[in-house]
Length: 259
Ligand code: CAA
Image (cartoon, rainbow, N blue to C red; front, side, top):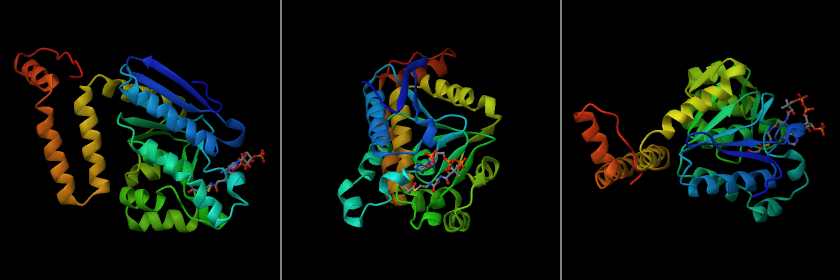
């Protein structure tokens, strides 16, 4: 598929696909086409058997500076409702393969919400996170009030969304929003390294672990625990479970079949 605002590179390392938002002049502002394309690229990655893990990134100056303000500035409430633009974001949330956000520079508003839709965040030390929607008379609309609160707790989420200030990567690392902060020249490589490690794991187990951990955010504890238990039992129907446990007992390296 041809993309207007994305660069997609399958198999940059074994099993790793890179999806790069490429709208640099607008600081990767997320208009409807960008979001449609990210959804399409992740759907394609899910369908691609060779892909085991995706790295979603922007550039050094901006992961994404938010939803495209110019595109929605004049919209009425009914127009926003009819556009149903967040439906596109649901596709990202429902991607079955792990998605790692490699973040540098501005990661704001919808950009921060997009990073939070990913499964892990690797950030450069120059990354800045924020939900500045309050400064333009609106509020986070792509899950920010919910996901941010679950990730960093009520007090900090309130401060971030009510002040609209930008917070450095180090602060967000301490708050638990992101996995690691590395020097700017290394953030992309670091994300690829993490993706490569995950790409070597048995794919069915990876998929069900992701689904189960997400259930912790999306369901009540009872339901989440039930989902985890069922997925755990289900893995005993895979050849990879037999192979993985046999390889451990036999002190050799496992060979994954994805079955
Ligand atoms: N939407 C549309 N265009 C944007 C944009 C956005 N979110 N962010 C930046 N741009 C554009 C600017 O308009 C500018 O374009 P022009 O050259 O045509 O004027 C270009 O990108 C470069 O930006 P700046 O000149 O402003 O760069 P800067 O370095 O001076 O400032 C910034 C950088 C602080 C990130 C500033 O651009 C900014 O505040 N951006 C908006 C951040 C924001 O409010 N994001 C939330 C959006 S609403 C949202 O996301 C809702 C939701 O929950 C889904």
